[in-house]
Image (cartoon, rainbow, N blue to C red; front, top):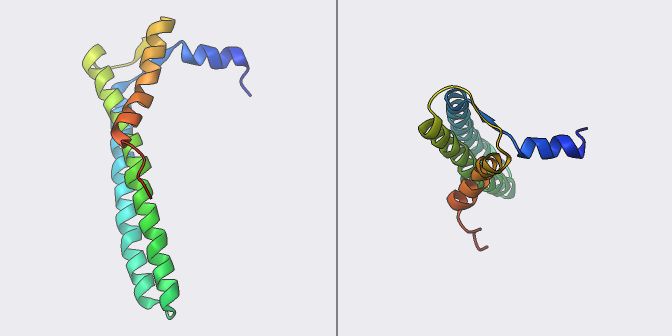
Length: 126
């Protein structure tokens, strides 16, 4: 378990290879969308084959919630990470970037959370 000093050190350093990060994020985004599409197909089959109409409705509702979660949480988080990697690439160029200045590192470490908040928008009213 990390001690308080190593947690503080993690906040005072920013490090990223934007090329590698962008490729990894693109692969995760594509795989996530493929999984969602496959689950959508499986959900339709399961709902169509369900003997109990209430069970079919439950399966459809569970998938609908998963899909809402993808659009409300997962997708904005992934896009925020992509935005940060693009910003690093545009600012510092390709290859490994390391920022050791504590103030600058904190700013770069915080940018992901700023992008998440901006891209996710206000929470839905339910």
